[in-house]
Length: 273
Length: 311
Image (cartoon, rainbow over all chains, first blue to last red; front, side, top):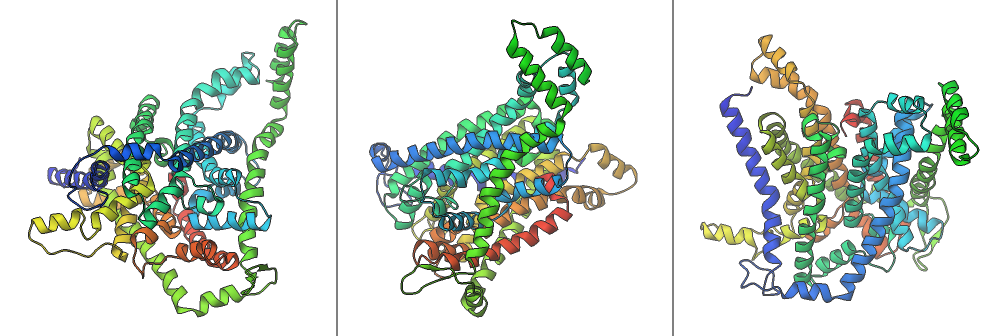
């Protein structure tokens, strides 16, 4: 075990990092109630007026609706394609398997500007007009990787002999899926789906290159901040988004406790996010 | 095995249950021809991936060799190296490329230094409850909106922001940190820190305690154990985290645009304005190949260091 001094030093460092991570988030929560529309510190007084303004703005509502649609469609597609790929990689040995598993990670590992610019060239190339579909296609590329990683990590920890046992006991493919595969995978799918949804909902770097005239919520906020417009509304949206973040975090926490990821490690980035 | 399934099929394939019989026959077929199942599973994702993602990368490469007619702004499909020549000859673009790579490296290093002791404390010192709390402490910022987290720092670093207010309280003069390269570095380090903490934690957590005990039994001190047992085993986690921090910084234009100054342009910003403002897709594509090549080299090295198992 570490010496006492070392442990205190590590603890102190950890506390400082937590402060670094959280203090800015706490600050924006305060700014959301800023009475003035000048964003200086300290704020002159408190009001809930800007929440009302943000809620009433049709621009904001349309952007939220577009973002929700894009995130749902991208997540749905990713769940199907990502789990299929994970099954194939985990359960089958074939020529080029290593190469395929490497290629599938590219959308996550390559810089956003590369993915965005590549898709933009592709759409320009094939004369596709930017729309909700192109946004969804762009988001699906990295959402698939998220689901794939989550499902693959889970499959690696479960034994393939479960499937053989199920077949031996007379189950057909559907029964095996319903009573053997699904219980093993469901939490991984929920975790992967949640993360894919959140990433899609938040994406701005790639989205700029795949969206047309319509604004997703991040594109709208990006425009507001860049032009210095509607900053009080941005504060109110930021407050709402941080509060909503608590839901997936709490769910992820529960999933980790139920599946023992917290104790046994596992693939940290994929299984725990 | 297949014989067993056939027998089951015979038992249950009664006239009243044709659906079940068909399902069993299908299951039997896939059991006997495993490759068919594998192909069926792999084909849709792989086809979609090849038709969209790989095709896009190819389109990127091809359009990088085209040009835009300066008068009509139409893309001309004439193969040439003009875009790359401009990139290499121009000192400005070289500076931008070096700045992007330099800040990405600095951010990666900063995050590794911040994350390692944190992850170590989380994995090996903290109690179960402390660990659960620290998980939330990392996950909440990770899941929060990226734009919001960049924007907050603008409010902090501004002339009349929180930082200067605090400095004035303790009698220090105002600092002009907003809209500088320092701000860009700080914000990137803040935003990507969770992406470094989680893989490092995962790697540290997987080290069996018996390894450390064995090292101590063999006479190694705390530092020697750390350097020769813990660090080599944690390295794949650090490299995995660095893929995220490095790649995410390398491919960003939002933070430099929102929080950087006149001399904070990234590769991404040139690409962004080439597409959004001057409508020069070929030049943007040519410049986007630079982070692609840098990242390809980085991934090759990372793979050698075993980072892909830790992702």
